[in-house]
Structure formats: structure tokens, C-alpha cells
Length: 213
Image 1: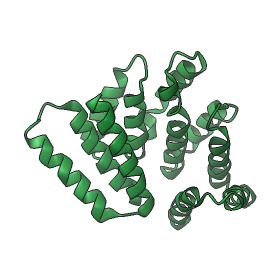
Image 2: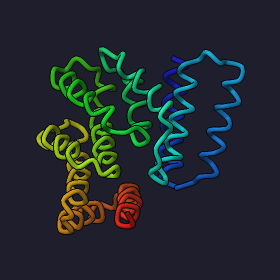
Image 3: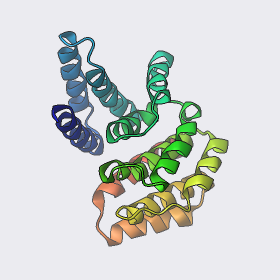
Image 4: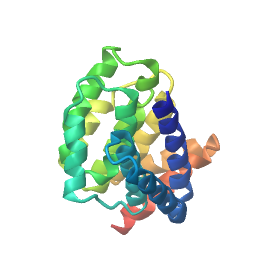
């Protein structure tokens, strides 16, 4: 239970700090976890928490992790047979700093387990955010073939509780990938009409970086 509570607290904190684009706070979180790790060198979850925080830092500028860190994470994900909440949270936070070429294969497994309803309700709620994060990463990494494959796999999916948010993100990311300003505009119109300012801030951050590239 302690591990689950720690994960939930860190998840909420990292989401807020990323939304605020607060590099100073993110560095403090990384330093704090690194300090705890000194006395717990064999604690895998603590190592994962550090990588989640570090990846959130990288996400601000869309940077990639070193090849050794990418390998460390993909080795962990390779060993997963049944995706759990912890695993999907970790994947959600570290996807952006891993080459999508190394994680695209997991999409099929995650979708299959979701569709066959073998996930818990809590775990199922992480599927939509994870798929969107992988799609975003493929676009930001300019992996056009992978993006096309991902869109073919996920564009017809529906989610009981998160479908509206999922479809809005899908519309926005398709607009970027296809260079379709109308789709991007439509996605913005949806969140503006519903006053979803948090999503607007995330859209702004992605779009500003992508257009610079």
C-alpha cells in the first residue's frame, strides 16, 4: 500500500509540475529521490520514481535519455506479462525519453489486455493516457511510419470514462501529424468551449515546440 500511495502522490506532483513547466521544482524532486536512493540502492521502485521525474524534466524540452537508461527501461517492460497500474504509470512517464521504436510492440499487448478486460478498473484508466503519450512521442521523434501504425491501431478505440478526452487528444495529434490546421483548431475549440485550461496548456507546449522544429 505504501508503494501504491507513493506512486499516486508522485504521479500527481509530476503532472502538476509539468503543467507549470517548473524546472526548478522538477530538479528538486529528482534530487530528493536521488538522496533517498543512497540508503536504498536496491529499491527498484525508487529507481523508477527517479526516472519518472527525470523523464518529466526531459519532456519539457522533448529530450531523449541516454542509451543505457533507455535499455534499462525497455528491459523492464520486456519482462511484463500482464500490465498492471504501476507498469502503465511508469510507461506513461518515461515514454517521451525512449525511442518509440523500442516500445511500439507493447501497444498491441496493452490494447489486447484492455479489450479482453483482464485489467483492473484502475489499470484500465491508464491505457488511454499511455496510448496518447506514445503517439505524441512518435510524432515528436518524427517517426512517421510508427505514427501511422499507431493511429491505425488506436483511432477506433473507445474508452468508457475517458473517451471524450482521448478523442480530443487524438484529433489534436492527428492534426499535427497531418499538418491539418483545421483539426488542430477544432481540438482547441473543444477545450476552449469547455474551459479545459489544463489541456490547452499542454497543447500549447507541444505545438510551440513542434512548429519550431
